[in-house]
Length: 184
Image (cartoon, rainbow, N blue to C red; front, side, top):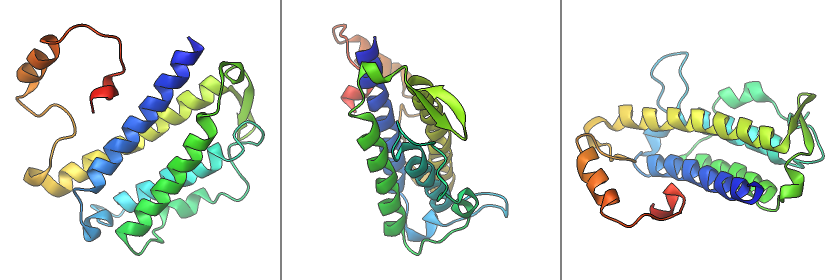
């Protein structure tokens, strides 16, 4: 189970990264920075927060508290980017940090205790916490992208009205054991 957990987790993180990137490709420069209300976050701000969290949580993951002293979470909600390219580069920096931390993990690491703000988590719990946190925010990115693009939005999953054809395609194939992202 431990080996399949690590493999599945990595694939899940890759999937959510892909959803973000498929959203980014549909947006222009201005759309990355659009706010709908004074209290809402732009795509750029959400990326800044996700990546800031990743850099804090995954740097020296097994040996240091996941909330680093150098992290300034409040600043993550103030735009400091000047271009879409800067936002995407910071996104990549966060994801690279995450993958460099989790890819080398082994089943022997899964029950180790790591800390986030002095709260102990097994490695499994810490991974699950972050997977849920990132998927929550990436869902926000996708939702904002859909709102911004409206009728120009290119769906990232099964299109409205397309479930029957999608299911027919899936059920027309032999049963097999693989991760759902293998066909993306």
